[in-house]
Amino acid sequence: MNDAMQAMCDMRPNGAPGQQACIHCGKVAKNVKPDVIVRSRCSRDAPTITASILAMAGSASEAVARKLLGRGGTRPLEEQARIIAVCGRCEHFSDGRCAACGCVLKWKISMIGEHCPLDPPKWPERAD
Image (cartoon, rainbow, N blue to C red):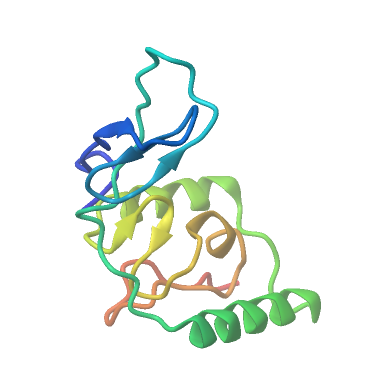
């Protein structure tokens, strides 16, 4: 489900002073003034990230190493905008992350050499 279709949290006081929690996903808003309605995207219908923490850490480390070793640069902003548009329509995209690989999209798409993890990929690594 993409961000445009994602449901909003149903925040209610959770018993702690100045806090509200969503009755669906459990997200907590702190330092809330009385009579304030908190609006937040709810994760109750968000796709589950399927990559393990270890796989995500390994993938991120490899991407940073490629960039530091000069094997990757920064993608042009126009290309990043095109990729964001593609990912925003994807069923695996939720709240700025890819559920297929667990990556934070804004970091991943900024680096040349990174690509969509799906087979076939929805966007390729940049060919220089």
